[in-house]
Amino acid sequence: GQPQCQGQQEKVEIQVLDTGVGMDQDQMATLFVTGAEVSRRGTAGERGHGIGMLQIKAYTDLFGGDVVVESVPGEGTAVKIVLNKATD
Image (cartoon, rainbow, N blue to C red; front, side):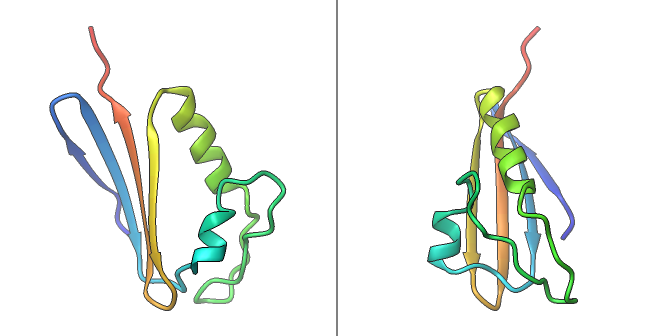
């Protein structure tokens, strides 16, 4: 999907949407758990490594932000990263 970026007063939101295989509640529950097996084949048969979301969460936490994930099996996933705007 195409990344989107929105700015609020004190926050910046980056959202990526896809129309892939999506995730069920069990997969979502382990999305940010180190060592959990959450990677599976995508719509084109591609295989992930299962570490991308852990990296996103670690960097977002480092900067005091948040990661929000919404997903529907068979329809796709939306990942939103919310960060504080930089101050002078």
